[in-house]
Length: 121
Image (cartoon, rainbow, N blue to C red; front, top):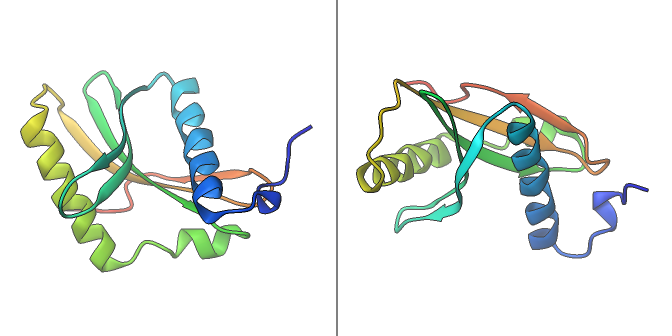
């Protein structure tokens, strides 16, 4: 039986569970995980996923309801994600033709909502 995420005691544990659900979502679509919790001096990227020539930087948000998770990515955080992505690309040169920033919102029932391309150039 699926445990409700709200029953998990700490925000950290909820975040880890939400990230795992997001990881599994992308893996089912054929993506491979290049990095989990990529940390830099300017911030962190929850997941870095790749499929062929597409590289996706994923921000995962847990909220009790989707609407709050979908609005949780603020402009300042978007700038930090870009900066982190630049660090990742500098450390991991590859042949990616396309780069995308996606948002995954997970609610307390472990339902997942995927918003591709939430940050544009």
